[in-house]
Length: 381
Image (tube, rainbow, N blue to C red):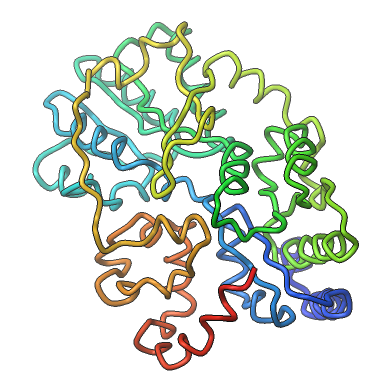
């Protein structure tokens, strides 16, 4: 804890805030990619310490939030089938599909289990040879390696009653999609340090040059975030756009070669839909042909899924940084953690959950008097 406390030191934080104020001369809008960074920013009020006009835009880096509705509906379909043990991390059980969630399936008699590792699901497959065990594999470059390793182990051990429902996504193509949006206001990125600890930084220099945006690899503690913001605004003020690694205690330029080798062996790149954003070319992974027999979509032939998105939830706009969570009319009223309309309110990394947890009084009703006054300011890039 001492090590973590050092990265929350208030005196050091104040110095960084002062340096940011001394550096900034005009408005800037930057996006923190990861939902974990969003929670740190909102929890510690970092965005409220920044100079006027410097805006933090919350990015799509929450694995639960961007899992497309179609995949969730496929999970519900598979989990409903007899003889299936459907395994997932806890967050996914409350994410609404088109009409229900995994908790509802469980209450209706489905064998839905929360696990803490994909290897727990593989062990269940060994212990229950008469059952089909499916693990819901979602997330970014951070969770993909252990899921790939689990499939590798299943094949190596000859365990045939295990499969993976895959919905893995990659960050760099998402950054590219954000920059290509006609409504994009992002002028710089705080890249997610844990993603880079796996994949390294080699994919980012091309993005900084192509879109003329600074990208700073950043950690997750308050001082990490403030240091990342300072490095970013220095670049913006100087008209620079390079990649900087501000998280060297965890990120090597080459990443984790062993994890990357496992990903390359088990997965292959594919187009992938992101919930609230849409299809992004080459933004995901699927099991490669050598491991296709472990793909739950192929094993259970879940096709012709008809999805039905909420007409009220605006999580897609939140994920693209077009609105702040409390600017959704349903925030804190129709949509709460107990009754979520979208995944951004469910996930522990969701932006709506962060605002509800730390700024729940800032609902539309509470802020309506000031929202009109601030509308013009908040839409300035």
